[in-house]
Amino acid sequence: MQSANQRTKVSTIILAGATGELGQSIAHYLLGQGADVRALIRKGSSEMARSSLQKQGATIFEVDYTSDAELIRACSGGSCVVSALSGLREVIVDTQTRLLQAAVNAGVPRFIPSDYCIDFARLPKGSNRNLDFRRDFAERLDKASIAATSVLNGMFTDLLTGQAPVVLFGLKRVLYWGDADQPMDFTTIDNTASYTAAVALDDATPRFLRVAGEVSTIRGLQQSASDATGQSFGLLRAGGLGVLNTMINVTKTLSPQPNEVFPPWQGMQYLHNMLSGQPKFQTLDNDRYPGIRWTSVRDVLAKRPT
Image (cartoon, rainbow, N blue to C red; front, side, top):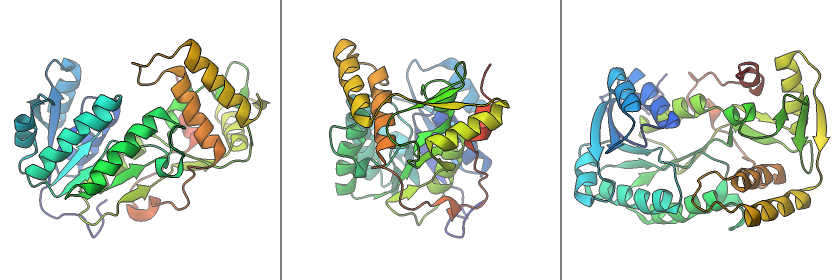
């Protein structure tokens, strides 16, 4: 459902990172609302992802992200650039900076960066490598002559079904450090994509929008897991946040994996951030687009692969 501030004319959205799961979902929702989607695809990208985007109605635009001229052509005529790029500094800072400059040079009025995370501005620098990249890019974005909106969504709820080792289905326990009653923000990839598409089609958005499909605590996750499975889950406290920080440092030393986007210690940093309460959203903007149905933690856990 479009807000009163959204465009009535057809918008051309430039979508970077369109072949990833989040990018494809954003494209799906944009196309569903009648937008023209120009999907920027790296040469050699997955044929399956390319085909899926084409079948949905997106226009495929092969681009060399190191070519300023190609990026300017790709952005020409766009009403908003949406980035769903994923990677390390060379992507989140360097490539996005080239994309940003191309958008400015092409006269695109709006830019949505690839943030989709907890509130990194409330965290001390050095507490999360990947969020430091986003902070560094945000400094460049704020100096550019373009309107920008970051969508912040907490943690992707989908990660609770496996990648984030918090809900331990085999042990029927919820693992945590620190305070079991600390509120945390969770939003599914699908809800984040739907919201981002609405933001891209909205001409009057602030610098930051914050959403959460559900605000839950560790005890809340325990209840959600019990409700989703019909089995009683308990809590497993592994220590305080100091213990988790030590584990992060040890893991980073023994297995640094500097070229991996999500090495184990990176996920541990993210969990430490959330459990600290520092990046907890103070207000939520869920009601800005009332047509979105927010998916609960329980619903995600109930649909987990078995």
